[in-house]
Amino acid sequence: MNVELTELTRKFGHTRAVAGVSLEAGPGVFGLLGPNGAGKTSLLRMMATVLPPTSGTLHLLGRDPGGYGPRREIRRRLGYLPQNLGYYPGFTVTDFVEYFALLKDMPPRQVPRAVATAIEHVGLGDRARSKLRTLSGGMLRRVGIAQAIVNEPELLLLDEPTAGLDPEQRVSFRALLRDFGQWSTVIVSTHLVEDVAAACTEVMLMDAGRIVFHGTPADLIARGEGHGVGDAPLERGYSAVLTAARS
Amino acid sequence: MTGDELTGGYEGLAGRVLGPHDVDLDRVWLGVAAQVWRRQPGPVERAAGRLLRSPGLARALMTTPSLLLGWVIATATVLLAGVGVTLGTGTPWVGLIAPALAAAGIAYAYGPGIDPAWELSQSMAISDRMVLLVRALAVFGLNAALGLAASAASGAAAAVTFGWLVPMTAICALALATATVTRSPNVGVAAGATGWVIAILAGMDAEGQLTAAITDSAFIVPYLALAICCGAIVLLVTRIPRGAS
Figure 1 (cartoon, chains in turn brown, yellow):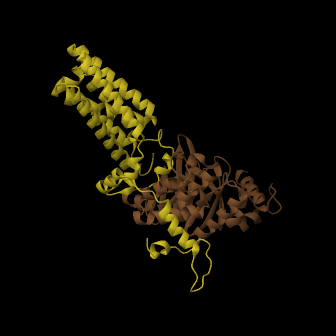
Figure 2 (cartoon, chains in turn cyan, red):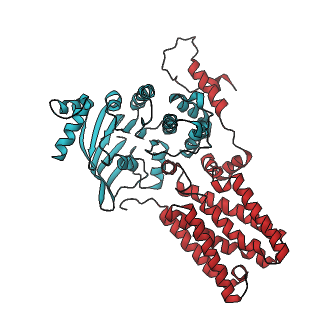
Figure 3 (cartoon, chains in turn orange, cyan):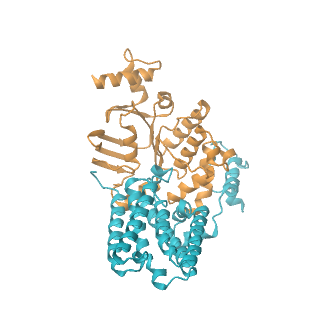
């Protein structure tokens, strides 16, 4: 298992952002759905080793990130796209992706090819030498995705990756997710249920810090039959599960 | 560039099935792109990479805001002005301004307030604490070298020329600790400058001389104690807790 969480909790003051989440995940694409404030970002940040848990245990890629050595090894094999990724405006696309490839401790000889591959994967080959300050919001998001995948991570954590992408880019991005999901664990936090329907093998629905549903997209759709509110079958499942969890 | 360098190691973007005599142009293109787009590190970055035995750490060092050319030129300009004033008035202004300049550089060396991709940086294999250490040492070393050169050029006595190094260490540690705790380089600069002004005023009060803060050996122990305390605060703040927090 690439991800093993047991009763993972994170508090901010008196607020429990994540309230006892347990999860095991191997290769595949996992969609993390939920309303604002459900705890998705806090959960992803803990898995990205950025935020320590308040309690519970966390094993990533077979290691405990509490120790320096294991944490470093996890981070070498991790790809992370934060919800709010800042950019260095004077960097080119290549500079930015290369910078994080080096900080991921990739062997320097592999870096140029890996950077080129990642940039081509996100369709930014024609802007590779453009300064980041000249790019649109959607392009910047793709730069962020490129840095996340540059080391071909075994654990890929993406927080709202499709925000700002146009429909054509989102279709390409879903294909990329499916590719990665064949051999790595991809966890995607999103509000867009169509991304989940198209790309994810499993769906987790969070509410008030807890996972209230974990199953396949088909399972979630089945939960919405005859219930729920929404235009699409998955949206009806989403609202039905949330309604049941809150009642 | 060899054919292997152009084509080796890539399985193809489009995943097309190729015949035995087909050329995977995607693969060739990636080899070309890797060579064309690659950034050539400058001599300083290459030297830092060899010294630190980490190209990533060297790259992080080269992106330090207070080591960028504009900042270094500004620091040198202020010190040159200090040399002029020192030569004109006989008061060792270089020694009085050098610690504050270094503190500003240290406060702007590292932290969430100056790094747009701070959150992402914290998830990297090369630890942010190591980046902090390397950047802080580099900024300190550069400022010390510039300050010593300026101090020597101003004809100051040896006690003055070297006397500000210890207070500079303390003021830099204070600025760094404050910037780290408050997550704001500006607050760090303000704390460093305020601390230094207080030290100068305390020296004047005790000895009746403007330069007492850098020449009076009685201040060395308090300076070192402040530096150690502030260093401990930085280590505490930048640690990653193992569990509960």
